Amino acid sequence: MIHSMSSSHCLVGSPYYHLHQLKNLSYKVSLNSNFIANKHSITCASSRSRRRRRCDLKAKSSSDAEVKNDEQEKQKRRVLRILIAGGGVGGLVLALAAKKRGFEVMVFEKDLSAVRGEGKHRGPIQLLSSALGVLSSIDEGVAQQVMDAGCVIGNRINGLADGRFGNWIAKFDLMTPAINNGLPTTVIISRMALQEILLNAVGDHIVLNKSKVVDFSQDTHKVVVTLDDGQRFEGDILVGADGIWSEVRKKLFGAQEASYSGYTCYSGLVDYTPSYISSIGYRVFLGPGQYFVACDVGNEKMQWYAFHHVPPRSYDTMAELTSKKVKLMELFGCWCSDVTTLIDKTREENIVRRDIYDRDMIYSWGIGRVTLLGDAAHPVQPNLGLGGCLAIEDCHQLILEMESITKCESDAIKLNEIVLVLKRYEQKRMLRTRIVHGVTRMASKLLGDYHAFTNFRMIWHICFQASGFALSLVLPHFVAWLVTNH
Image (cartoon, rainbow, N blue to C red; front, side, top):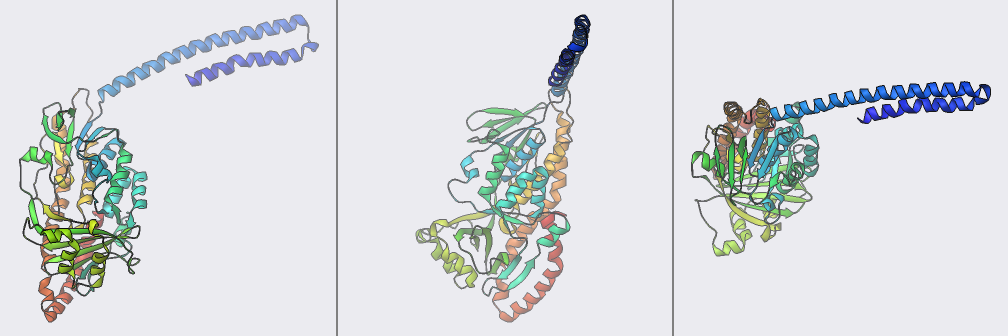
């Protein structure tokens, strides 16, 4: 209508401009001829204007009919409605992907303050090239924000080192696989900063705070979630992204005991810039029954994790609770200075402890309209730093499968089509998650068995040389696969 009004204005104005020109030439023609000319021009203008208005009315009628048809077509192609339990990294990435593709999406998060990072400190997260590539494919702007906020470690030396002496056991090349596959380089980013970026991109109106999913029901037409405050919401698909202690998983498959890894973990964040910061991204220091991870997280800070092999539910004594640093120096005091310095420079209130758990793999992640992703589906131990990356990769595969759902004319999207889509998602993600799950468990055992090399110096030296040679052959290919998912 804006276009037609402009055209009408030009057509009506044109004869009056012509009349203005005729008036300037009035001294050359008679008054009678000037009048006749003016009358003729006005008649033409009036006739053109009527014809134009008829065309405009006809065009408007046609436009209204098209709008009505479009609205009817949209009603037939009802948008897929996705409900997500959990507003952690996996839940927010899936919500962002769904939003970008025009799906209706709602995220239910029990504690938004934990997502935003207020309160107790939460450690950083490693984003391998595969995860960054997924973020770029979902939203390049968000991916760039993440990379700008993160600390690039893929362009430095990373690997395993001896805890007591500090010498390298194996080095990981994280950069070459990324370059060869055209992917961004691995970064470390504060979990709080990452979730803040994702939450802002998704929008607070999509993430419902203080809303824990405690139950759900489903039928051939819909799935309905029940929150802890009694509210109910319905959708076409429910995705459980609520972590290792997932309520959705519990409702799907019943209560299952989590598996204790054999390790408790002390973690700390320290304001410290070591001399080696420009050349080393992270190191995993190995020792008898324990290992220590140190990584640069940017902003002149270092994050470290101290894993110690203890029986389950071995709680600290009152003295240890008062000073975790004393306990840590008892455990790691004879290790190299790169380890002890980090512990010594960390403030007591910045040290926290938690036991490490995972769960046995399950080979079906959902029933009907409900599925799982991330730690809710396949929780892994943190020794490879891959939990968050796997969740992001899950989101990518799941949203690709959802795009194939046919938008039918009925009010409900066909149940059998949704079931097939969710099963394809599981099948395409099962192999990689099974391998990573198995490797993290194996790594946990092998890292703790390193004491066999340190007890006897000559045996250690021989085994070090042999294992170094074996690692040099196998690790590059395995690391490349981990980093790029290719």
